Image (cartoon, rainbow, N blue to C red; front, side, top):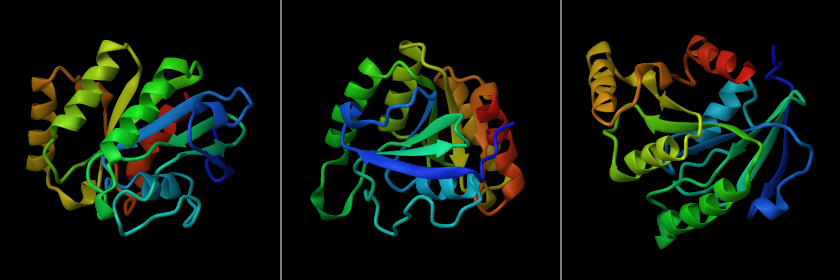
Length: 190
């Protein structure tokens, strides 16, 4: 089992060429710019300030590497979608991810973070379809699940079926409910 509390920030990299060396498997986190990637990393590792959280969407603009118990890297990618100040996050995300997916041989899984309170948008569906097409292992992680009810969960699962996503590829998580993070820790430990 992985000790998630033994996680350290390694470095930020503008591209894959500047990624840390070390040969650990990588788990990439992608999602909209305000989905809560940094908050999830902090909660998963039980550290309040490991990953920087910002009230302004679009803060992450580099690949941020976290060493988890000398077993794997969690890689926080820039978000896509909205950013304050007119910065084109979609362009940054597209360029960085094209490079990452074409050259990263250590990638073992992609965690696609989705806000459980929001409908899937075109960018979300495009990423899911890309991962399916490229046969890259992925898990959809619906964040902020503490803010929705069972009926809303059911609706989300139904919308995923419409685009060909199996319910087994879905985890509902909340940074405010630590027990909801256990399925994710278990998945990453495997």
